[in-house]
Amino acid sequence: MSPHTGQRIVFGLLALAAAAVVLPLLLVVGYIVWQGLGAISWEFLSAMPRNGMREGGILPAMVGTVLLTFGTAIAAIPLAIGAAIYLAEYARDNWVTRFIRLCIINLAGIPSITYGLFGLGLFVLFLKLGTSLIAGSLTLGLMTLPVVISTAEEAILAVPQSFRVVSISLGGTKWQTIRHQVLPQALPGILTGIILGLERAAGETAPILFTVAAFYLPQIPRSPLDQTMALPYHLYVISTQVPGMPLTIQHGTAVVLLFFVLSMNLTATLVRSRARRRRPW
Amino acid sequence: MGSLLSWGKGRVSRWGEFAVEGFIRIAGGSAIFLVALIFFFLLREGTPAFWEVSFSNLVSTRWYPTFGFYGILPLLYGSLLVTTGAILLSVPLGLATAIYMREVAPSWVREILKPLIEVIAGIPSVVLGFLGMVAIAPLVRRWLDLPTGLTAFAGSIMLAYMALPTIVSIAEDAIDAVPKAYRDGALALGATHWQTIYRVVLPAARPGILTAVMLGLGRAIGETMAVMMVTGNAARIGREWAALFRPVRTMTATIAAEMGEVAQGSVHYHVLFAVGIVLFLVTFAINGVAATIALRGQPHRGGQLMR
Image (cartoon, rainbow over all chains, first blue to last red; front, top):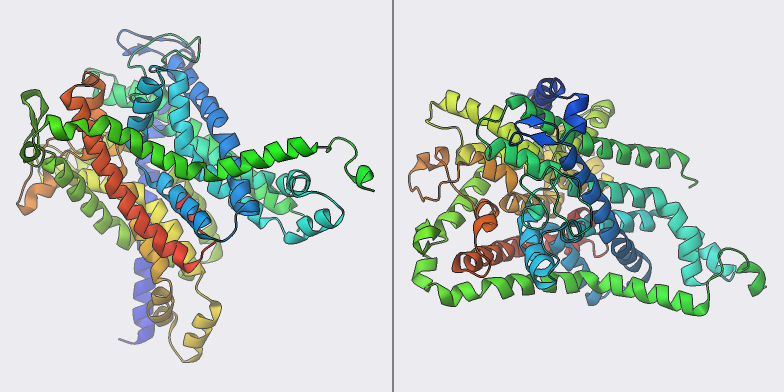
């Protein structure tokens, strides 16, 4: 067999592998969407669950997930952006910085269920916040930090040095340079990172299991100290814990959750590609 | 001049600037503080288990909390079995996909594949678990003629797909970072495209690929929801080969399933936190190795790893 025939076979196999990664999931997701769209009606989206969740809608779970996503944003964004600015603009290349990076990589690698345990230990029990929106948001916010830090740092590093040089040479201080030259240019990249981080938080179940999620609570939370239902946990509950659950409601809930998450994904992609086209450098 | 330049909306007082820079420095160091805090709280809630339960009980092979048996070996076994299966599936697939996307595929195919893989990365694990329950597990049961499809094998498939996006994107970056001169050199010497990839590009990209594998491993072993929903959750150790096609129970699933029902401060509660400590240490070691490999090569770039 000549090397070129061999190459053709190998490349064919590689293409097959890529197809095997992408196609099955598309098929299965397509199937779920196909099945689930039938379940979606105005009532499903706007009503409280009834009869042990076997009838009615998923409104409280949707509201819960939206509130949690906002809470996560509030908890994560200031610290993450601060850390990203530090790493990109202030940190020297020494062992402290390397140690910080090592810690961030480890934060990113800590399993989501471990974040759940930590949230239970610190926020729910030690700080006595109870199972509440605020405890869940803080837990999810922590989990989101590394994603936002790394994308924001990359966005800041991508701003050309000339922007900084000009600003400093005109007498701007370091912070003025960052605030008025670097951050505005890096904003789309930072936004992309934030949206991707929130996307992950919105879909997570394990960290909210013991920190905020309510099994069956057909009401809208009224204060940050309330429990709430949330879409991912609701999907888990109705697909494993409730006997005699109609499949259509399961499929419908899965579709709504997928829609939430994938629309955030799409937004991030759009922000990024728009910014690439308009970039002045 | 100074007053002219700092005039207007951008004016920040010296003290304001000092405060902002102080916050930035604190935020920068916060990662260290947070890792320490997480470890501290796991220890605080978990260590009592080590004197409440005898050591021989903890390392026994029976996990039966209602009767006071807290052997975590079956859980460790479950996690390892499912993760090994996932890695065996996802590393070859992920690596092949990365090579295909970077080296072989025409650019329009890559433009389609890349966002699709990001979409896969974005699918919540509970949705994957649901897909596994309604689609994969029944297939596994029918094809392999098993009493139930909720097995370690089904879990491995789900985990493989959870780990794939990580493996593909990091391996892709590693391949991309190989200098073009290497390729040109090999091609000029008469090597075919595939020979160049196999003998030159892949060896040069090895540290990055190793990082990709380690991070995929870390992601797989820490995955909770999808695994809990499709592995059947039976805490037992099987020595035979067919164990892969029986239900198992992982560390993550055990914590997730049982923590909601235990009394706070009970022995069971402490043991679950102890399982959390084991899990934390395992992932910490895996990520530490991945980070060391990656940061050694390029001191400034760990971006991909932090996600």
